[in-house]
Image (cartoon, rainbow, N blue to C red; front, side, top):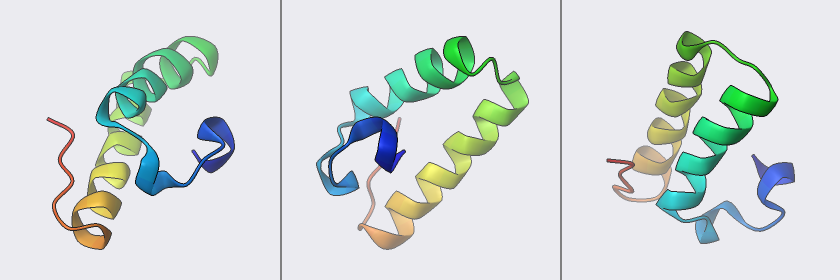
Length: 57
């Protein structure tokens, strides 16, 4: 993600994360739905635990 966004993760918006999950991982990287859901879970965990309740919903 850091390479993809090329900026500090604290500055990445929810919309940018959605685009990363849906467009980059699904369409460009051709990851399965299960893999994308895994990435989403990891991202949610990092933001919620590390950066005080940043939700992706």
